[in-house]
Length: 421
Image (cartoon, rainbow, N blue to C red):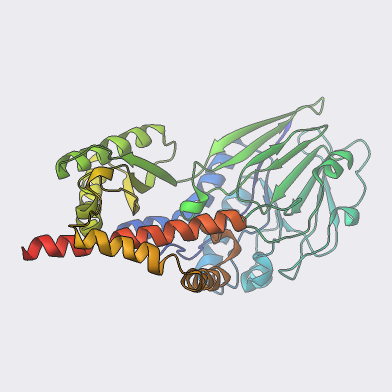
């Protein structure tokens, strides 16, 4: 009989809301409960497929949580697995190390939480002999590689390694138990169940090495459909891996080109068309969209001035589509080139003055850059990549920030001038 298991990681159960843009209370409730719904979906999948085990490769929790509501919910889900005779193998990741729940929660006997020393748990499975290898850390920092500390593969058994690692490093993730993928392939294990990096990756090679990503995104920087791995190891030890959808809400960036649009209702219609197209491409039950409005349009100033009204237009159309939500609007529209400030246009002259005399000053740019760096330092690592992954990307972000600020100020002044005339 084959040995089958579900592999997941980075559930971040009951993770707090990380986006200040989620001002819609219903959307905040959806995202706030999405990690729980993802765990329920994972357990449901285990039961439906009648697997032998669930493997969680770290970061089941989200830091220093003390809520016993989280504990009770987790225990109830693991109890469902226990009653079905499904084992659970769990290692602690860097976020789990901060959680008191990890230390205090009493779990069913079919749940194995690996300790800080490398351990091997052997079982007969349903025909195959299986050896689960894993280790956890009690501290959130793990600057050294773990692979040398894992025990050797058990002879004549299917060897599955469970490790929470940043591998060779990834943007937006702290270095955690780094290791080389080539060394994992060469270690003699049949399957490596990894965790820590939130983007799914199948590292091709002699063995099966899977980073499953997270089962539920929490903000726009964790966009796309999220899945877990359903793994089947056949009697001949061949391995088949299937992706199974688990995300309830799917974050996506949606671009809306408004070039040449002159009527407000046509701009709203273009938003609806873009949302409908993305909704058709969205695999998860709910779409959470960040709209990016681009192009040259005579509506540019009005859209910038009345961004709240355009947000309301977008939300009305998202409700009409169903299970579609607007997380934020990013306005990058510009007035047509021919209509931008002339010598007879005082607002245009002011815009040019801001560009030449204020934004062009290196001390002003340096001050804005320092403010953004301070903000980045206060954010968790996984939320910092909006400002670029390197110095060139950071510089482009600052340039765009200053340019958009100039256009926003000009738009409001121009609108006020028209209203007073």
